View 1: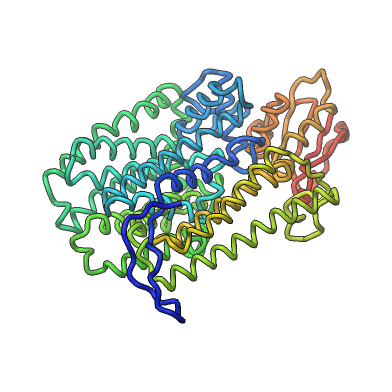
View 2: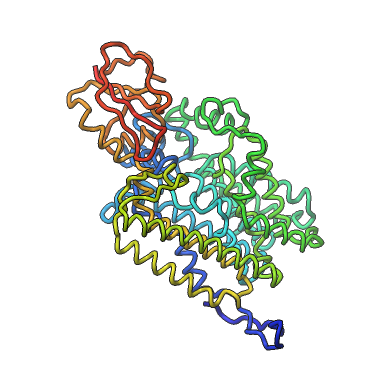
Length: 561
């Protein structure tokens, strides 16, 4: 499991004095296996899931159908919330793998590509900052964060933002020695972040680039200034080509994207319309779990190295980039947990040297805490799955049936069960080597979280897919749609639902919210069980109602004239 790099000192067993086994570092082979096991499961094998996947996939699906790569469209309407980098890559991968995978599975591979880029450049940055071996420590810290797990396996435009921040971090650290290469990576990182999410990443990178020389003497050099000059030139095509093409093609959509979805979301004047309001104390409360255990390790690392802050460029970069990005999040009028992903890169850079230098006692307690917690979680996954296979129904536990359909019949999938069993066996075998590792605590966390995700993405995947996919509900509605109809209008239909209605049964609705005078002969209403449709005119007749399995809130009603 590991390669021997250096011997440890003598240790006492408490009863007898004995020579301790040599302490080891995790080998690159085992690290690569663990990282692969983290990234790949869950990328294929299920429909697009609400919240983000549903609309992201329909946008890139429409790009494949219309060959319009400039104006993103959702169910026939321009959708200008994000720039198109994720849609471009997702569409290309969906098309390239269409002979082997469903389009949505091929598109989701884009997330795997961006996560591989994130791990690569976060590792390169930590290796350049702290020396050989610390690159894998930074990646292990990232893999241990609870906040990264789900977002790193779904179609979401925040993963190129994360990748861009990691690339830019590597560029910053190179900038004091190799200005040309550093400028290239810094510019590419800002560009990837911009085309993935908007002005958030290039804005934060720009502010950090200016603050570093203002706060620390080590960054006040001509070499660093040259790096910034190269970065500016490299970033320009990323920052200008698509926005200019969008403005020339559709000036109003450019206004909606830049002014409402970037400036308006930050200052707040468009939040009431677009959603994602930043509640008081959202980020202080979220970071406690979202960034665990990276935040804890980063704080310990900074405290231990506090006397080196004036001279250590990696510490300076980690602190400034974390502080700038957190300040942006705290002052923004909108917030979602996924917006905080770049914070994890800064924390991983700060925490990397601490991963292998925890005290033996603390490392042991964290290791066993992770084993017990994730072991109990793995037992839950296996136990519930086994119970459903034997009994034919889910356990009647409120915390499960509140979000998952209680009546679902779990299929037995030999390949999925084999992968889950192999992952569990490898995790148990790894217990033998963990006590000998310098990084035993962080490896235990990363391995336990990876095992939990593998079991979730194999044993429970059909159950999750049944609950989170819109395929069943819209396919059930399709026979009730009149074959001869002028059009379909809708009330209250959300982004996710519009996207999946378009993909699964090819129906694009005319929303009354933006077409108040529409006069179709079919009406689809989305609401909740507690808020059914209001009184309609007598010429409307309800022909169907339904919802996703296990969802006792969201409902759909279909009317025809």
